[in-house]
Length: 305
Image 1 (cartoon, rainbow, N blue to C red):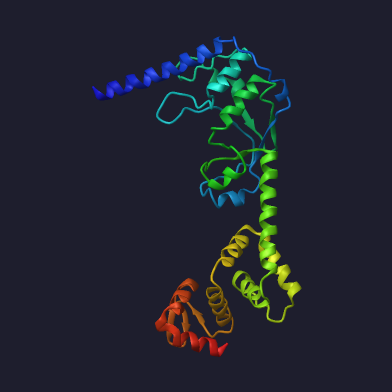
Image 2: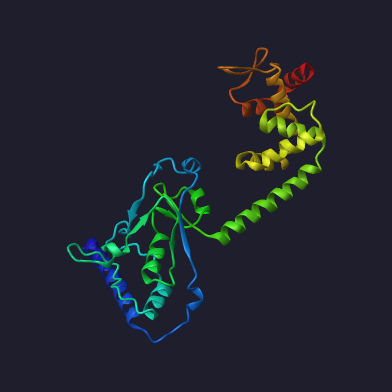
Protein backbone atom coordinates (compact mmCIF):
# COMPACT_ATOMS: atom_id res chain seq x y z
CA UNK A 1 0.00 0.00 0.00
CA UNK A 2 2.86 2.35 0.90
CA UNK A 3 4.50 1.68 -2.49
CA UNK A 4 1.22 2.45 -4.28
CA UNK A 5 0.88 5.75 -2.37
CA UNK A 6 4.44 6.67 -3.33
CA UNK A 7 3.77 5.97 -7.02
CA UNK A 8 0.58 8.03 -6.88
CA UNK A 9 2.53 10.90 -5.32
CA UNK A 10 5.12 10.78 -8.17
CA UNK A 11 2.33 10.82 -10.77
CA UNK A 12 0.64 13.76 -9.01
CA UNK A 13 3.93 15.72 -8.93
CA UNK A 14 4.57 15.04 -12.60
CA UNK A 15 1.03 16.02 -13.61
CA UNK A 16 1.36 19.16 -11.50
CA UNK A 17 4.64 20.03 -13.25
CA UNK A 18 3.09 19.51 -16.69
CA UNK A 19 0.07 21.58 -15.72
CA UNK A 20 2.33 24.36 -14.42
CA UNK A 21 4.20 24.49 -17.73
CA UNK A 22 0.95 24.63 -19.69
CA UNK A 23 -0.37 27.46 -17.50
CA UNK A 24 2.78 29.51 -17.85
CA UNK A 25 2.90 29.07 -21.61
CA UNK A 26 -0.72 30.17 -21.90
CA UNK A 27 -0.24 33.25 -19.72
CA UNK A 28 0.91 35.99 -22.10
CA UNK A 29 -0.22 38.99 -20.06
CA UNK A 30 3.28 40.14 -19.04
CA UNK A 31 5.56 41.58 -21.68
CA UNK A 32 9.24 42.40 -21.22
CA UNK A 33 11.82 43.80 -23.58
CA UNK A 34 14.60 41.32 -24.30
CA UNK A 35 16.00 43.12 -27.34
CA UNK A 36 19.18 44.03 -25.45
CA UNK A 37 19.95 40.30 -25.21
CA UNK A 38 19.78 39.64 -28.95
CA UNK A 39 23.57 39.48 -29.22
CA UNK A 40 23.95 37.20 -26.18
CA UNK A 41 25.88 34.22 -27.47
CA UNK A 42 26.62 30.81 -26.00
CA UNK A 43 29.78 29.11 -27.20
CA UNK A 44 30.13 25.36 -26.73
CA UNK A 45 33.71 24.15 -27.09
CA UNK A 46 35.27 20.68 -27.17
CA UNK A 47 37.38 20.03 -24.10
CA UNK A 48 40.84 21.05 -25.33
CA UNK A 49 43.26 19.29 -23.01
CA UNK A 50 41.76 15.84 -22.80
CA UNK A 51 44.95 14.55 -21.17
CA UNK A 52 44.46 17.07 -18.38
CA UNK A 53 40.81 16.15 -18.03
CA UNK A 54 41.74 12.48 -17.72
CA UNK A 55 43.44 13.42 -14.44
CA UNK A 56 39.96 14.11 -13.04
CA UNK A 57 37.84 11.79 -15.19
CA UNK A 58 39.43 8.36 -15.25
CA UNK A 59 36.66 6.86 -17.40
CA UNK A 60 36.71 9.61 -20.02
CA UNK A 61 37.01 8.32 -23.57
CA UNK A 62 38.44 10.25 -26.48
CA UNK A 63 35.78 11.55 -28.86
CA UNK A 64 37.40 11.77 -32.28
CA UNK A 65 34.25 12.77 -34.16
CA UNK A 66 31.07 14.76 -33.66
CA UNK A 67 28.16 13.21 -31.80
CA UNK A 68 24.49 14.03 -31.21
CA UNK A 69 22.84 14.58 -27.82
CA UNK A 70 19.31 15.28 -26.60
CA UNK A 71 17.56 15.73 -23.23
CA UNK A 72 17.67 12.53 -21.19
CA UNK A 73 15.26 11.10 -18.63
CA UNK A 74 16.14 12.01 -15.07
CA UNK A 75 17.23 9.04 -13.01
CA UNK A 76 14.37 7.03 -11.53
CA UNK A 77 11.62 9.01 -13.26
CA UNK A 78 9.93 9.57 -16.62
CA UNK A 79 10.71 13.29 -16.61
CA UNK A 80 13.03 14.81 -19.22
CA UNK A 81 15.95 16.84 -17.85
CA UNK A 82 15.04 20.07 -19.63
CA UNK A 83 16.87 22.47 -17.32
CA UNK A 84 13.90 24.87 -17.45
CA UNK A 85 12.88 26.81 -14.33
CA UNK A 86 9.89 29.08 -13.64
CA UNK A 87 11.63 32.19 -14.97
CA UNK A 88 12.48 30.36 -18.20
CA UNK A 89 8.87 29.27 -18.63
CA UNK A 90 7.68 32.84 -18.13
CA UNK A 91 10.12 34.03 -20.80
CA UNK A 92 8.96 31.31 -23.20
CA UNK A 93 5.34 32.25 -22.58
CA UNK A 94 6.09 35.88 -23.45
CA UNK A 95 7.83 34.72 -26.63
CA UNK A 96 4.76 32.64 -27.58
CA UNK A 97 6.69 29.39 -27.60
CA UNK A 98 4.99 27.13 -30.18
CA UNK A 99 6.21 23.84 -28.72
CA UNK A 100 4.57 21.49 -26.22
CA UNK A 101 7.16 21.45 -23.43
CA UNK A 102 5.47 18.78 -21.34
CA UNK A 103 8.48 17.11 -19.64
CA UNK A 104 6.73 13.79 -18.98
CA UNK A 105 7.75 10.86 -21.17
CA UNK A 106 4.90 8.55 -22.15
CA UNK A 107 5.84 5.40 -24.00
CA UNK A 108 4.41 5.26 -27.50
CA UNK A 109 3.42 8.94 -27.53
CA UNK A 110 5.29 11.68 -29.42
CA UNK A 111 7.21 14.26 -27.41
CA UNK A 112 8.90 17.48 -28.41
CA UNK A 113 11.92 16.41 -26.32
CA UNK A 114 12.38 13.37 -28.57
CA UNK A 115 12.11 15.31 -31.82
CA UNK A 116 14.97 15.92 -34.23
CA UNK A 117 14.70 19.69 -33.88
CA UNK A 118 15.79 19.70 -30.20
CA UNK A 119 18.82 17.46 -30.74
CA UNK A 120 22.28 19.04 -30.82
CA UNK A 121 25.19 17.85 -32.87
CA UNK A 122 28.34 18.51 -30.83
CA UNK A 123 31.17 19.01 -33.33
CA UNK A 124 34.93 18.94 -32.80
CA UNK A 125 34.92 22.71 -33.40
CA UNK A 126 33.13 25.45 -31.40
CA UNK A 127 29.34 25.64 -31.70
CA UNK A 128 27.37 28.87 -31.20
CA UNK A 129 23.83 29.38 -29.90
CA UNK A 130 21.86 32.65 -29.69
CA UNK A 131 19.25 31.94 -26.98
CA UNK A 132 17.43 35.26 -27.24
CA UNK A 133 17.15 35.19 -31.02
CA UNK A 134 15.87 31.63 -31.30
CA UNK A 135 13.50 29.76 -28.99
CA UNK A 136 15.09 26.49 -30.06
CA UNK A 137 18.54 27.83 -29.17
CA UNK A 138 17.16 28.90 -25.78
CA UNK A 139 15.77 25.42 -25.10
CA UNK A 140 19.01 23.77 -26.23
CA UNK A 141 21.08 26.05 -24.01
CA UNK A 142 18.96 25.19 -20.98
CA UNK A 143 19.23 21.44 -21.31
CA UNK A 144 22.95 21.68 -22.10
CA UNK A 145 23.39 23.19 -18.63
CA UNK A 146 22.16 19.95 -17.07
CA UNK A 147 23.55 17.54 -19.66
CA UNK A 148 26.08 14.92 -18.58
CA UNK A 149 27.98 15.52 -21.83
CA UNK A 150 28.64 19.22 -21.25
CA UNK A 151 30.27 21.08 -18.37
CA UNK A 152 28.59 24.36 -17.44
CA UNK A 153 31.91 26.21 -17.57
CA UNK A 154 35.65 25.65 -17.79
CA UNK A 155 36.14 25.58 -14.02
CA UNK A 156 33.60 22.77 -13.59
CA UNK A 157 35.85 20.51 -15.67
CA UNK A 158 38.20 20.33 -12.68
CA UNK A 159 35.52 18.65 -10.56
CA UNK A 160 35.46 15.59 -12.81
CA UNK A 161 31.75 15.27 -11.99
CA UNK A 162 30.80 14.40 -15.58
CA UNK A 163 33.04 11.51 -16.58
CA UNK A 164 31.52 11.25 -20.05
CA UNK A 165 31.67 14.96 -20.86
CA UNK A 166 33.18 15.96 -24.20
CA UNK A 167 32.39 19.69 -24.30
CA UNK A 168 32.02 22.74 -22.06
CA UNK A 169 30.28 26.10 -22.24
CA UNK A 170 32.84 28.83 -22.76
CA UNK A 171 32.25 32.15 -21.03
CA UNK A 172 34.68 34.86 -22.12
CA UNK A 173 34.00 37.09 -19.11
CA UNK A 174 34.52 34.16 -16.74
CA UNK A 175 37.71 33.19 -18.59
CA UNK A 176 39.07 36.74 -18.25
CA UNK A 177 38.15 36.78 -14.56
CA UNK A 178 40.00 33.49 -13.98
CA UNK A 179 43.08 34.69 -15.90
CA UNK A 180 43.08 37.99 -13.97
CA UNK A 181 42.98 36.08 -10.69
CA UNK A 182 45.87 33.88 -11.86
CA UNK A 183 47.93 36.94 -12.80
CA UNK A 184 47.23 38.55 -9.42
CA UNK A 185 48.17 35.32 -7.65
CA UNK A 186 51.47 35.08 -9.57
CA UNK A 187 52.31 38.73 -8.89
CA UNK A 188 51.66 38.26 -5.18
CA UNK A 189 53.80 35.13 -5.18
CA UNK A 190 56.61 36.90 -7.08
CA UNK A 191 56.70 39.65 -4.43
CA UNK A 192 57.03 37.05 -1.66
CA UNK A 193 59.80 35.23 -3.54
CA UNK A 194 61.77 38.45 -4.12
CA UNK A 195 62.07 38.92 -0.35
CA UNK A 196 63.58 35.49 0.31
CA UNK A 197 67.22 34.89 1.15
CA UNK A 198 69.44 33.16 -1.43
CA UNK A 199 69.63 30.10 0.79
CA UNK A 200 65.88 29.74 0.97
CA UNK A 201 65.53 30.20 -2.79
CA UNK A 202 68.11 27.46 -3.34
CA UNK A 203 66.28 25.17 -0.91
CA UNK A 204 62.93 25.72 -2.61
CA UNK A 205 64.38 24.95 -6.05
CA UNK A 206 66.09 21.86 -4.67
CA UNK A 207 62.84 20.58 -3.13
CA UNK A 208 60.66 21.34 -6.16
CA UNK A 209 63.00 20.48 -9.03
CA UNK A 210 65.60 18.36 -7.23
CA UNK A 211 68.18 20.74 -8.69
CA UNK A 212 71.33 21.83 -6.85
CA UNK A 213 71.93 25.55 -7.48
CA UNK A 214 74.86 26.20 -5.12
CA UNK A 215 76.94 27.73 -7.93
CA UNK A 216 74.12 29.74 -9.50
CA UNK A 217 73.50 33.48 -9.06
CA UNK A 218 70.32 35.24 -7.95
CA UNK A 219 69.16 35.87 -11.54
CA UNK A 220 69.21 32.16 -12.27
CA UNK A 221 67.31 31.42 -9.05
CA UNK A 222 64.65 33.97 -9.98
CA UNK A 223 64.19 32.37 -13.41
CA UNK A 224 63.80 28.89 -11.92
CA UNK A 225 61.28 30.10 -9.34
CA UNK A 226 59.38 31.79 -12.15
CA UNK A 227 59.41 28.44 -13.96
CA UNK A 228 57.81 26.91 -10.87
CA UNK A 229 54.97 29.43 -11.09
CA UNK A 230 54.08 28.44 -14.67
CA UNK A 231 52.92 24.92 -13.85
CA UNK A 232 49.86 24.26 -11.70
CA UNK A 233 51.52 21.43 -9.74
CA UNK A 234 54.81 23.21 -9.03
CA UNK A 235 53.02 26.49 -8.26
CA UNK A 236 50.84 24.77 -5.67
CA UNK A 237 53.91 23.09 -4.19
CA UNK A 238 55.70 26.46 -4.03
CA UNK A 239 52.74 28.14 -2.31
CA UNK A 240 52.58 25.29 0.19
CA UNK A 241 56.29 25.51 0.97
CA UNK A 242 56.13 29.27 1.57
CA UNK A 243 53.83 28.80 4.55
CA UNK A 244 55.90 25.98 6.03
CA UNK A 245 58.33 26.53 8.89
CA UNK A 246 61.89 27.32 7.77
CA UNK A 247 63.28 24.46 9.84
CA UNK A 248 61.10 21.97 7.95
CA UNK A 249 62.16 23.42 4.58
CA UNK A 250 65.80 23.16 5.63
CA UNK A 251 65.28 19.52 6.59
CA UNK A 252 63.61 18.68 3.27
CA UNK A 253 66.46 20.36 1.38
CA UNK A 254 69.02 18.50 3.52
CA UNK A 255 67.40 15.17 2.65
CA UNK A 256 67.49 16.02 -1.09
CA UNK A 257 71.21 16.88 -0.83
CA UNK A 258 71.94 13.74 1.16
CA UNK A 259 70.19 11.56 -1.42
CA UNK A 260 72.04 13.33 -4.24
CA UNK A 261 75.39 12.70 -2.56
CA UNK A 262 74.45 9.13 -1.58
CA UNK A 263 74.74 9.97 2.12
CA UNK A 264 71.20 8.66 2.23
CA UNK A 265 71.00 5.58 0.00
CA UNK A 266 67.85 4.85 -1.98
CA UNK A 267 67.22 1.11 -2.43
CA UNK A 268 64.30 -1.14 -3.32
CA UNK A 269 63.68 -1.61 0.38
CA UNK A 270 63.64 2.12 1.14
CA UNK A 271 66.03 4.86 2.27
CA UNK A 272 69.08 4.06 4.42
CA UNK A 273 71.84 5.93 6.22
CA UNK A 274 74.38 3.21 6.96
CA UNK A 275 72.32 0.49 8.70
CA UNK A 276 69.52 2.87 9.72
CA UNK A 277 66.30 2.30 7.75
CA UNK A 278 64.76 5.76 7.38
CA UNK A 279 61.57 4.69 5.62
CA UNK A 280 60.11 3.72 2.25
CA UNK A 281 59.21 7.22 1.01
CA UNK A 282 60.86 10.64 1.37
CA UNK A 283 57.93 11.63 3.59
CA UNK A 284 58.89 8.74 5.88
CA UNK A 285 62.48 10.01 6.02
CA UNK A 286 61.25 13.46 7.09
CA UNK A 287 59.11 11.96 9.88
CA UNK A 288 62.00 9.73 10.99
CA UNK A 289 64.50 12.59 11.23
CA UNK A 290 62.04 14.81 13.11
CA UNK A 291 61.90 12.33 15.99
CA UNK A 292 63.91 13.34 19.09
CA UNK A 293 65.36 9.81 19.14
CA UNK A 294 66.79 10.28 15.62
CA UNK A 295 68.95 13.33 16.31
CA UNK A 296 72.21 11.36 16.25
CA UNK A 297 71.34 10.05 12.77
CA UNK A 298 70.43 13.59 11.64
CA UNK A 299 73.73 14.96 12.95
CA UNK A 300 75.61 12.19 11.15
CA UNK A 301 73.92 13.11 7.85
CA UNK A 302 74.65 16.82 8.34
CA UNK A 303 78.35 16.25 9.00
CA UNK A 304 78.77 14.13 5.86
CA UNK A 305 77.29 16.66 3.41
